[in-house]
Amino acid sequence: MLALAACTQKAPESAVELFDAAAFATEIDGKPVSLYTLANENGMTVQVTNYGARVVDMWVPNAQGGFTDVVWGYENIEGYLGSNDLFCGPVVGRYGNRIGKGQFTLGETLYQLDVNEGENTLHGGSKGFYNCVWDVKEATGERLTLSYLSPDGEQGFPGNLSIEVTYAVTPDNSFTVTYRATTDAPTVLNPTSHCYFNLHGTNAKSTDSHILMIDADSFTPTDAALIPTGEIAGVEGTPLDFRTPTAIGERIDADFEALKFGKGYDHNWVLNKRSRERTPVAAEVYEPSTGIVMTVRTDQPALQFYSGNAFAGKDTGKRGEKNTFRTGIALETQNFPDAPNHENFPSSVLEPGQTYTQIASYTFGVR
Image (tube, rainbow, N blue to C red; front, side):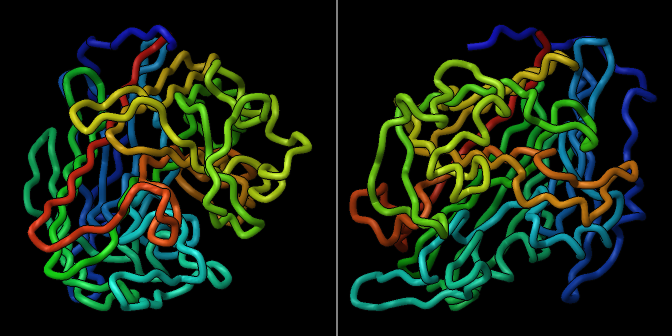
């Protein structure tokens, strides 16, 4: 595990470049959209829009004594309305990641979902959580709670699902994401946060230099469409072994079938030693040029690491920068992809009377 130190000095007001809420003020599907700012006393600052519950920017301390914006995003709502295929910064669901052929069976009923990636469903379909306006339930200086009612049949999923996500910036320079959901009929659920991180603070630089650790002895192999086969395989001796911190770019183009399928890293790691009673470290990322260390903790059984292989420089994001090839990484805390279709995977079923909960945190320090 990488050693890190928290930054505790009070930041000057000029340390971060925040966006004006006016650039996000609009109405979508008859619901108001705005921008919300969270900050702690150390100067760590996060801005979120309730359109898709998207993280717009995240200013964290760097080793040079300043602050760096470490997430990819856009300067106004128009950018997000034109970038949904990138899933830039939102909560995705109902089911994050992929469901093969957009189908699953609950009881004796076969459900057909909206398909939006070939014949498969990705991140809940073409109008998943990321494409919806969430209601603002609570907004304070350090905490934001958003809620959404997903009606029965939305994108093909059964049950009226009520979900809340709470974002918080805490004194230890953590960005925490907490989920809570209930349903009135059996359904499946696997929400996750889909931020793209670049610890350089600029999308002009590749994330290949980031040094990554993932606490996982195994992963779930897939077919060429990235749908799990149902097998759980060891990472030992493969380019997917990040148990020892390794530069992302060191083996990303290795002659390995899983990397060819993903055109780089786009895989589900089976995390070690999970416990619902605590949130152990799942991954750590370190960028030597800025000294920033990001530690990911979760109570979920898996983590999807995606290395931005589909970025093609077509979109212009914040500060006029292009989303070029492999300039943002996603670390998605989750259940296994396609779990509803594999009995040996952890269950993703939520029943009436149950409450779904999940917590993930991203803690920042310097080294």
